[in-house]
Image (cartoon, rainbow, N blue to C red; front, side, top):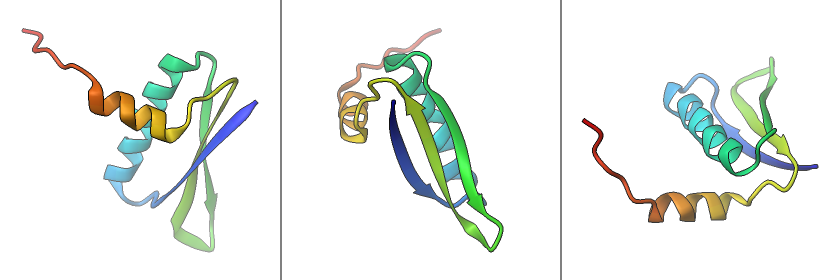
Length: 75
């Protein structure tokens, strides 16, 4: 099982939703992946977003695929 950890601020809605989007991308590539947040009550603005699964792609691969993705308008 592999793991990806991303430091984030859990009180920042943009970072929270970015983590959700990252998990959506990871789950498409690695079905069965699971995600959770690791927090520290003493440090309210510091946490880690953790994705675990079999054969997870690296963050660089995910961001590269997103950069090259073709988008189309759905009416």
